[in-house]
Length: 300
Length: 172
Image 1 (spheres, each protein chain N blue to C red):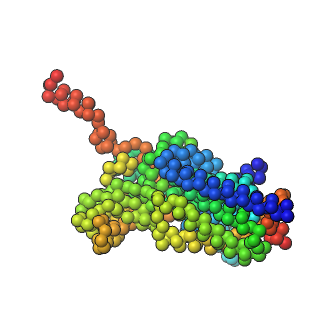
Image 2: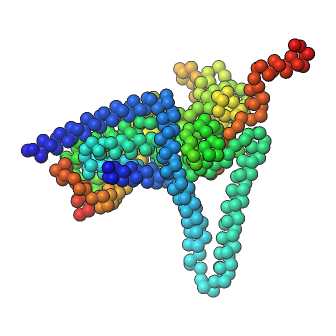
Image 3: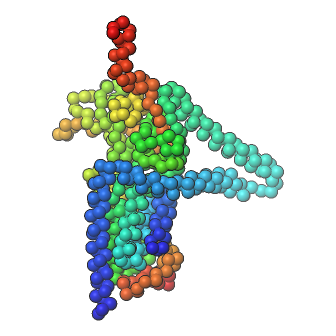
């Protein structure tokens, strides 16, 4: 009887503690939505612990995969071609390595061309992990604050916009993809010059929101960054309009946007660390503009 | 304290495995919730205030790894833990099938609470519903094996009066 009453009281304690911690969670959720630095602080610690293992595992798995591809399939070949097979294996191995270097070279070259074309300056990071819960569309890269990355910087690839940095540690950063529901990019439709906000829809697609029914947006039109949000440089490709629904009693149209970037195949991303030259010029202080004009006109 | 640190370490490993599974192309719809399996184990073997706090910290670790909102996973996991700990004496987790059903129910409950806690910031879509069910089924498939492994490795040393011990049953 005594044991039973102890058991009941233990369970009551568990119930009360669980309920209290649930209330704490509710408070934390509300508080962290207003103060993202709280999450960043913990994310730094978790990233610093987890990322080295993820990088190591990435390397091991790619090595294991290439090992399997190169050797396991050759085990059934007969002895008569032993010498030829050894030569072939060596050549295949070299070709595999060369091919891997070539594809990596092409990816980096396209990023480099993209950087030189757009005057963007940044840091190239390798994607080493994804969000573990599957609910948040985000990735981890192997470059952090030691490489000059900070929260709020834009992440892009040659094909288009990837997302923005939401947390950084010394050697790792977390990027929230534009396909996430909590992400938003100020955008403009290239043809019709209609502005809106591209948000994630919870799937691999995005939605262009807050476009009133007065504007005509056509399927297949290209959606670009407007540069008005202060995060993404102007004119970067976001995706193409894949569906437009103007019916219903709502004030705004439902415009579906297919992102230009295949987020499942991201390997390297460019973190934009500086604004493009045009933005810097447009950001010239007013005082210096007045001074320049005065000097030009000989006015004192 | 050592036990709490051990579970935190296991939680980090589980988070790492989940992240790597996604990185290597596993769709998030069929991602097993390994951290939740740890919480299920705690719910049957670590009944007390310490267990509550460990479940809460595991949830915080998951929230930190998402780096978006702090609290939804912590709330979801601590609730699942509370429910399991309170019902642990009435749940017969001896059979792997029952363990799988409990994992399915716990996973769906945890995901629903996660969605509800973050509802203001993240609405639910059909894909979200599929994710809840898919992740629940995958967790249910893997849970009996993982629970058995945990029970063999982490022998329970405290009072057997508090509910049925999973370790003895699954080991047998």
